[in-house]
Length: 434
Image (cartoon, rainbow, N blue to C red; front, side, top):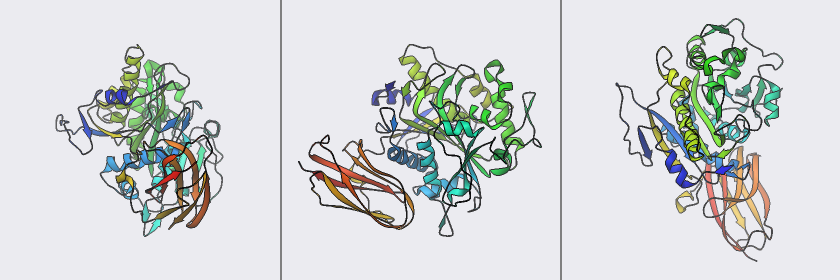
């Protein structure tokens, strides 16, 4: 598997886009036939993965920065809230994942980061509860094989996760889709249980359709996907997405599209074979998939393969489907977790103490939280690379203490302890003595 260098990343950013926007915004995209090109945020961080492992704390920053950039809102909770017009504290948000290939699924680490953002939405001073979030696909078995935990219960602080084949769920045979002449029925999760939908797909090619990303992700949302594979799935994929948009009530429950490109596949139908270390996000399903195809094609070119031109993406942009556009504003976010002086903020929801500092191999961390929160504590170097994961998980409101032990494999020198909690980041410089 090949890691993507900064040089390769630069090449990606121009492929197929009308314009490139690098912070601060300098838009050079043009409107076409009075239709504005769609924003696609592409976030790269060289520290997102280490070997075959995903650094969840890095991905959390990537996801937070991406949603803020997409919406133009600097508060993560408010940014997410703006994605869902009319949302209330009781609204149900479902996240459609793609776990069908357990060697390259929508990674649980990314979904955790999306959930952590959603629960920062506030309603009357109270946070959105996790139990109003459903993570789903067609079967419990596919989900568990990809690392997800099936949920049966009513704990408000636990996300629900289950497949359409889960007891009490099933398909909605009262609702019919005409998918290019084939009658299909949606999962009840899609048609009856969800007020809003996040489409969280994977970046990979597929021989049956050219690529499989957000548009094709909904083959896991209906009862008969095997009936929709003729002619490279075109126009079945656009037709299915058009039916989801136009038949379901309320219309357009799909609000944001995310491609997990932490690991990806550019050829074959098996495991990941390249490592873009990216997230791609848009509110335009066609634009999101189009940019994903550009990333795959750049890697194919690097490896001596001809480009893929998945016809269903082009068809989806055209009448009678009109699902989006292939004219895009590409917005680059590069290495948002890199340690800089400007990253060191005065957080309002959390505080971190380190003592002693300097220290010989072991120091005590004191963490104070003003509310329950997911917490990531990492020892990182100046480039943001995670050298040691100190803690990753939920903490209750209050004060917590723990020790950071550093073995002899980490040499003496200056490092940083980075805290991500309560939607805020804090960095403490530390000195390891030997």
